[in-house]
Amino acid sequence: MTKHTATDTAAGGPGAVPAMEEGLALASAEVPKESQTTYRPFFKRVLAQKQGRIGLTITVVVLAFAIFGPLLLPWATGNTATEFVAKPFSEYGIFGSDNLGRDVLSRFLAGGLTLFVYALLATVLGMVLGTIIGMIAAYTGGVLDSIIMRLNDVILAIPQLVFALLAITVLGPQGWVLVTVIGITHAPRIARVARSATLGVITEDYILAAEMYAVPRWKIIVRELLPNITGPLSVEAGLRLTYSIGYIASLSFLGLGLQPPAADWGLMINENRIALSVQPWGVLLPVFAIAVLTIGTNLLADSFARAVASTSVENT
Amino acid sequence: MFAKVIGRRLILSAFILLAVSLLVFGATLLLPGDPARAILGQQATPERIAALNEQLGLNQPAWQRYFSWLGGLFVGDFGTSTASGGPVSELIGERIGASFVLMLLAGVISVPLGIAIGVWSALHRGRRRDQATTMVSLILASMPEFVIGIGLIALFATSVFQFLPAVTLAPPGEPVWNLPLQLVLPTLTLVLVVTPYIVRMMRATMIEVLDSGYVEMARLKGVPEQRVIMRHALPHALGPVAQVVAIQLAWLAGGVVVVEFLFRYPGLGQALIDAVTYRDVQVVQAISMLVAAVYVVVNLAADVVGILTNPKLRSAA
Image (cartoon, rainbow over all chains, first blue to last red):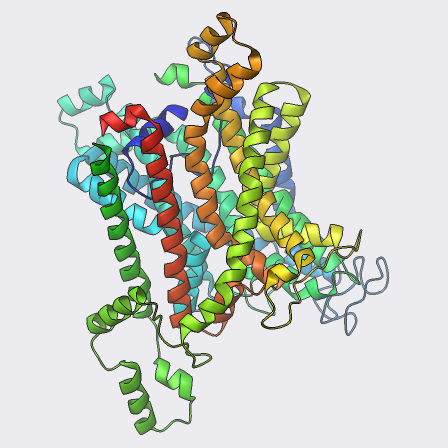
């Protein structure tokens, strides 16, 4: 990975960002290389690491809350009081009630699913667009490559959150706007990674062989190139999922994502933060959940990166 | 030789900003409804709407409006705010100082701090304190900024201790730097968000450099360890870090938005959120362009530093 960064920085124009961008900085020296004779599948290499196991576990636990939470609402989402009530384990619910007297625990259990679904959709959209753009740029090369990369620089010049705010101003705070704009602004960042990973395998003999057999270009991209860059792409997917969760939660927190009366973690924090000193649960539960979920997905991304780095012997 | 390279980067930067302006302006063409009606309200007579359209230049074709808007940007005329009716430049002028102070404080603290912690961590590679640093920076780098900010508020301003103000309560017109205590939590939040990235990158490049042949050579010929680190290793490790620092500084321009909202800090970010809420397009456009300009300039600066300090790049390009 460090190699790509060096070449990317040299080749990029202004606004050029190294491939690992905000990212995973692993020194190549500290990842043990595996011998070429022992092959272990990717998921085993991920789970062999402590942070891979921890990341997977806490992601799954928070996701279980988010997905099954809406099914086990203990006190429905109806009002139990008329205002903030902070008495834990009272008739107002285990964690008290929120600004409108609604049960905090129920709102909390119901509020994680949309956040995760939006973040996942945005990540998938970004991955698909970014991978296609990056691979085409790398494989075609020449003028098209330069044009695509310069257009990427244009989108990269606007921070993702500001871009999302611009889109929301024009189109309104709707779910599809959030998902689309986060996905589209992920794409150039992912395209950089896909492009440099593709450039790394494009000179391999099997690509030359496929070209000699006059295999159609799209088939080479799908069958020969794509399977060989899944490593860096998986790292990217983990990272982008972490950022997507952050952006979508942030937008909801700003009051520009899901709109009341929706139950949503980001929105809950916004609604309840004025009472942080008297009724902290309405803020702390969702804050804690978002923190743990992003830590989990980022730990997973980091262990993906280590798993990929440990096989770079085989790839070269 | 490298004046030419830098010149090319300059032209590219200008091109990028121009394209960004097209994008930012083009987005508003998607806007349903018309701004004149939004300003005057539903009961406005068609004559008044037509008059206001004339006044705002909205009856001209889009390309003509684009060029007059673009021309305005160069002379500091950002148009008229639909929400307040006043010029956008006035609003920006009032707010930009506060945001700049916050970004400057965060940058000045996190860059040296990140480099120092990264080097320290690399020198203790594999030990407990290195593993702890790596873990803490990974955790901090995962969380969105408002989560860190609320954690800090709960810790220092409300639930646990109560010695720092949770929100900025500056009387209107009072500069924020007159109330240093209120700057602590917003600055700390940004520092905690930005520093981990610098730490991780610094640590990685430092480890790479410490394993290199010339560091081994310097050690073998008996150079004192401190000198090896300060004169031989550090300067080489700083190159790639400059890029990450640039990205982080540019990120600050967008990242202050959420932090300012969280702490009710009277800066541009807060103004941007208000503008989005009221769909005040002119203000959103102006602030987006400003943020993009900061990003492009900071990256250009990092590129120039990179070209000037890297002899290989200098001759290759």
